[in-house]
Length: 226
Image (cartoon, rainbow, N blue to C red; front, side):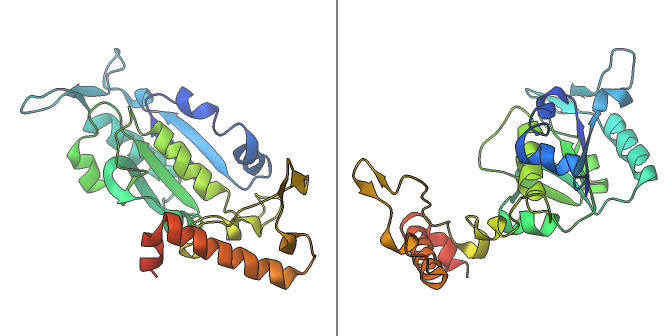
């Protein structure tokens, strides 16, 4: 999979993709993330990519020319399955969306900044608008990192144990069950006996019961979506 990201501050995204699971995905050749600085397509020698908004009001707007030129040039090299704009008013990002996007081959992500991007870019180029929550960040870079991480770990071969992702929270609309490791007795608090008995069927049943219980207690809305 290849994910291209257009941003005015690529430095914000360098660290998230050079460590841990994302680094492993790149080293295995399973995920390639390219960062493109929008100022490469700036309209003048001052590297301008934003301007005041028509009608007045606080906040600068990312201009249409640099973004259009950037997208047009990148599209000459490849066809994108999705062109995503990270924005607070987009659809809420969830595990179902991550699963769907992990099946794509080429994705372009536009990181908004300042007051956002010119509406004409959204209308002409954007195929999907995504929000990671009901709050506002300084830009779309951190949100893009969240989306790429959620997608990348789902790619076959990225995780050492490919079944791990199948038991993550929100798969099948359930939260993940409690997990334990050594020691079996920590300051008088013991690991449930079922996990120590070595019966895979009983362990699976226990985990499913715990997932249901935890979901009912913490996120009953997930059960209503089934």
